[in-house]
Amino acid sequence: MQHVTQPVEELERLALHARRLIIEVAHKSGSGHVGCSLSCVDILTALYFHEMTISADDWGNRDLFIMSKAHAAMSLYTILKLKGLIQDSTFWGFYQDGGTLPTHLDRFSAKGIEASTGSLGHGFNMGLGLAYGIKLRGEQRRVFVLIGDGEAQEGSIWEGALFGARLGISNFTAIMDRNNLQGYGRPSEICYFEPIEEKWKAFGWETCRVNGHDFKQILRALATPHNGNPKIIIADTVKGKGVSFMENEMKWHYFIVTDELKARALEDLRR
Image 1 (cartoon, one colour):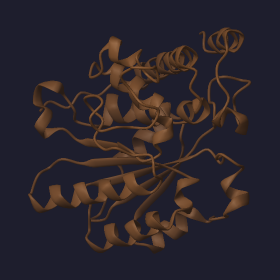
Image 2 (cartoon, rainbow, N blue to C red; image 1 turned 45 degrees about the vertical axis):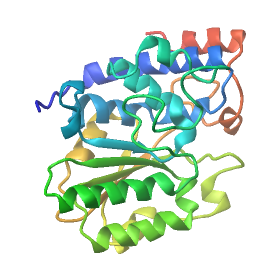
Image 3 (cartoon, rainbow, N blue to C red; image 1 turned 180 degrees about the horizontal axis):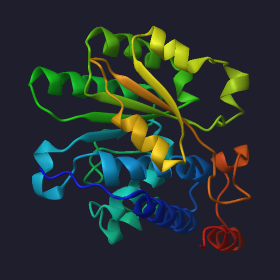
């Protein structure tokens, strides 16, 4: 399968377009979880349009992505639409009565949804299992999983961290969307886990930390060698990134996009 990459300028354009679509579909559906969807857009754009080998024409040899923080499903649906894997009619049927796409991810709802996730901590370990199976079969495919920083309070994450390092799953990369906001506060105040890099290193993982909105940093981190180990990228992000009145505001874990707020948000996202 041919691996296609995009220059940083094109990744920035795609990410801006994705943010506009998230605002549009959130407004149409009346769904919450807008802030967390906006915070991980740049990460997903870098994965799907630069790093991952994925093509509808050679589906069986694709790299795999699992969004463990499934409440940010709108961001994945949007990227899959831009990638041409989800049709317009499916995308705009998100969170509608009798619609097509649920607010949390369902493996059977659309092409490109690799796992049903929503119970935090589960998708991470599903990804580890997939990566181990791929390794045992001698395939060259890779697995990428996005987790949240609030999700990293789950014990299952750390059980998986032990498992992955012990088995040398070097075809596995986790990315933490470190926006420091969860449903009821800041992870740094609720369950303090810094120094997070040192903790993952102590578990035997290749570890790096980046600005999760800087494509050059994200791409460099993705290219960092695994050295026989699983890898985690801690991406410092901003919840609600790109929309001034949503940025770093906990309420945008739940608030919906009204007509007035849609207009304001799209104005912010004009360039």
